[in-house]
Image 1 (cartoon, helix red, strand yellow):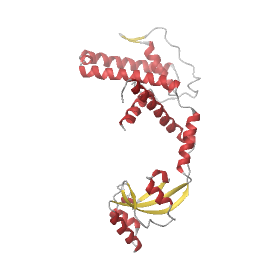
Image 2: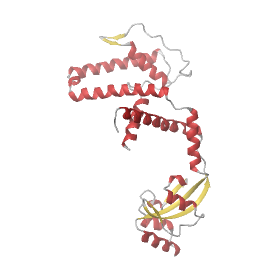
Image 3: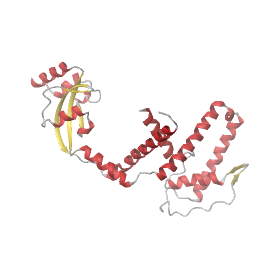
Image 4: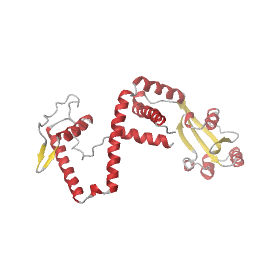
Amino acid sequence: MQLRNSLAAALLVALSSTVAIAQAPAKKSAVPAATAAPAAAAATPAKTGDITVPQSQLDLIVKERVAQGQADTPELRAFLRDELVNRELFIRAAKAKGLDRDASMKTQMQVAADSILIRAYLNDYMGANGVTDEALKKEYDVIKAGLGDKEYRARHILVEKKEDAEALIKQLQSGSKFDELAKANSKDPGSKDNGGDLDWAVPSNYVKPFADALVALQKGNYTPTPVQSPFGFHVILLEDTREAKAPSFEEVKAQLTQRLQGQVVERHLIELRAKAGIK
């Protein structure tokens, strides 16, 4: 869905860094970033040759690095200050060639500036409408309940016509091996070469007609008649079952957070489009 794709992109903008500076040496302080003593900020902008590094720029980048877990040290500030000097040299070289006056470049610069503004707005909005742990746990419980208590190891053969599936079932009844028939006949590129093996999965991973037929099978049996789905006609073999082991809340918390944040942004975008009279 195009709207969801644009929402995902907008959320990515909101959660990503906007300053592209070379990475400092990978060295983390043993002291948590929140308690690390900040280096003394210079009262005046730092100057290297004829290049002045605005203190506000340096402080912004240092703040981002501290948020990533690095300690605010004199060494880090010196490294980042030097990178800002390097960036300024490239900027001057680009302007000397007139690149900043190029129409295409101006458009790109405007897009970048707009992205920063969008990021600021979404950060502000999410700060007031963020996802709570309670909402995350509720979503986790809903998803976990939908998974069921069993996983199924199945194979299948997918064909386009019902009569082809019926012919395959007759071959199975005559003693043909399921995996060999799958390799020779299945139209599913994801499982054909593996003899139709679908690995372990919960029924909710499949479309409903397939899932219903799968859970009705006894271990070691295949469907006696073709199973129709939006993809074609299936012959399904149930090889084994086992108790489903859902991931813990902590294991999927980050994914759930991203998912619910996307839903918050989507609802807000729908509101904004409605206010603007856009359908």
